[in-house]
Amino acid sequence: MRSIKFSLSRKSTTGWDAAVHLTEVYLSGDRKADQLLDELPIEFIGDRRAACQSLFLGALRHGHRTQAALQGLLRKKARAGVEAILLVSGYELLDADAERHPKIIHHAVERSKQLINRFEQGFLNAVLRKLPDALAGIDAEQAPAAYYSHPAWLVAHWQKEFPESYRELLEWNQEIPATYLKIYDESIQGPAGLEATNWPQFYRITPQISWQVDLHPLLNQGNAYIKDPSTRLAPALLAPQAGESVLDLCAAPGGKAYDMAHAMKGSGLIVAVDLPGNRIARLDANLSTLRSADLQCKIIKSDLLELDAATFEAQDLPLRYDAVMLDAPCSNTGVIQRRTDVKWRLRPKDIAQCAKLQLQLLHSAARFVRAGGRIVYSTCSIEAAENQHVVDAFLKSKSGQAFELEDSARSLPWETGHDGAGAFRLRRNS
Image 1 (cartoon, one colour):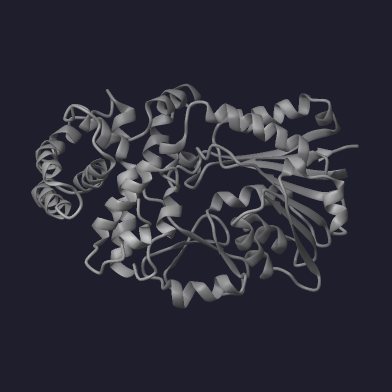
Image 2 (cartoon, one colour):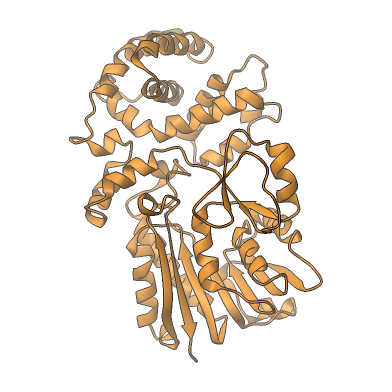
């Protein structure tokens, strides 16, 4: 398949065309939605880009419902290019009043003439005309997984995990996420277009704001960061102080380092560790706005499971730290509203596999906590298997006996009104 930039380079390409193309590429490959959006041509800006992003993410957000509706209309699975048109159109139909449905169908059929062959056009036309009724026929009570557009296995899992509130979770995941700005310097007057929230320093970004004029100066100077309020939980638990040494593990892209540097009042040492790769460049760029004569920010490119004393000695860095942050890779079940394609990528075995890796990472990270120091283990998962169960298993282990659980914080998004997360602070006694 041609590159996204090449395929969308024609001036006649609309936002709808681009959304269909991105959906086709997503269905055919293994790249994440945000990676595909990042590959849009540089000239793809303004209304075209906004329409493309809205339609593409909408197609994924509601795609399981559209696929369920299509099951009774298709004798065999459609080619990815045709399915992409159906998913984008399905989202448009769900998002519009019934009187607009004929226009949506006509537009899809007309634009598809540039994208698929004549035989497929006739097939598409016939299916699209039946799709509105098929979508409307899906009942929330009888088929919650299809209605709320989630994999059936995941809904069945949450029915056991959250029997009283799983529908609230499904409804939450289907909403459009807000974008938040955290302003660290309280003396800075935020620009018009920011709405105050219940969480100190966090502001909701509204469509009235100018990213270029209002936000970029704040971001470039290190005075603000685009992040969800849930990200405050783990750094607040760690509570690094001025002059302390902090080890930030799985650190990229550097959002938690921002919180920790400001909590340290710009004084001390932050050592950020992450795997070698593209994310290191962004991590370095973020840390560059924090470095000063009083705050050292160092980067180690390494797998945490392979991190050893020699790695620290090579950069003349301490082996033990006052505070360690482990923001572990996870299933992302707490951020599905924000990363809607998680529903498409997650598999039943992934939660258990994540928990196994997380326990290994916690064991590895604990080696670098000094006596009397503390470590915060955090995830953006809402699964007990990846949060409390991992911590319990660690504390019961031989190496975990040197630690005790001091405090924890949990966010269930339908309760807190922001992304889900879990965070636990452990203190090393010896």
